[in-house]
Image 1 (tube, helix red, strand yellow):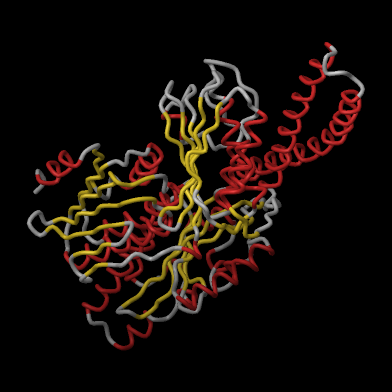
Image 2: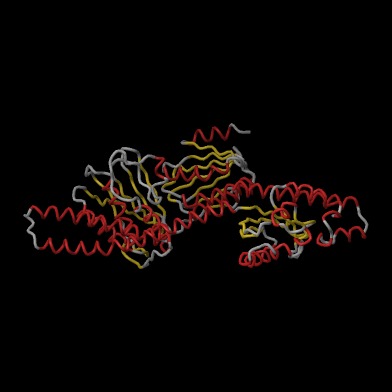
Length: 543
């Protein structure tokens, strides 16, 4: 779908070029005032066979394009449609002109399309919209329309656009969404139905437990049964949370609380649940945080229970919480089976579970997905550092926006910039921009840093960037899409041709870097390096 839309854009640009060329040619020939008057008449008053000579090139190309093409005048009236439109809709060329263009469109979509269309006409903005339209057989088909404004000597002349049939893709998307909605509805209903009898079973077991002596052999079986009931309660609660997340109905109660107290209580509770493991609260900085205490406690329980689950030998589990640059950073480290690098990016997906060929573990793979959603709702992020067989450390970071201390900024607005997250310098001798990212990064810090880079690139017209992530900690993956779609294309447009990207030690940060760079390698030559010397040598080897 992306490739098709990209093709549409390219062809639209080509058509704009043809029209512009034809009109430039018309000016050079120096037509008489009478001829100019005729040329300026909208095509709505002309037939397809007697269009002026200056439109011939445009029409010839447009009629060969395998999707619908149209043009409008500055007032939004249709002044041209190609043969594909006529074949698709069954409308005549004449009936399609003016506002007849909208006749085959479904009424609800047409109303929305009309509102968007007049909004774009007023601002001369690019136009993109999806709606349904009747084909020659009377069948409603989904289409995607895109258009660009075109000008002659800065005078707005109207729009040139294209329409493509996307019914198959849209039906597939709708079918997938319907299946997902039905699944979520089933999970919600099933969870509620399971919850009631399970509560009754739990109450009955508690009554039985009170009438049996702890020395009785059956007491041990009852204790094991209660443990399994607790696991079932957790699974049901997770299913309910997932259905609420998908429906956008997971409620949050934001209050201010002592974060270190909540963490200490969570660790103490887990010690009672998993007495075979040794929990070490290595550091817990005192800080107040405004958020949903219950939900964040749920995240910590999940991280701790995963550490217990994947380190069955009963080894140490180390917990730390520190305040750094206006953020709370929490980590839970185990010394269990570890996780392969290729599994790290998938581990927070719904129902995904780490390859368990080494041992069998309980659970549906929902806990980390729920935790990630809770962290995101608190404007935080998460990441994992792990090696197979060496254990894993789960992290999450929460911003203390009200307590953030803005470090002093050093800059001359032209050749260098430095703050607590980035150091940018113009290297005149090497004719490149040297960038050093430091500490924990988030969407805002990445966005701000990229805009600073772009500003210095434009002011100094450098074509090379040394992008050093060696001192980056944590994960900035929530900004990776923005870097890919906004930052890197803007740098390419500003003249950057080569970018040496030095990896962060963080596996999640490395994955985010690779994700950001993948779509842009045709625009910028991006190479990844593990150490700075090799990166500099590569940039120096380029002319």
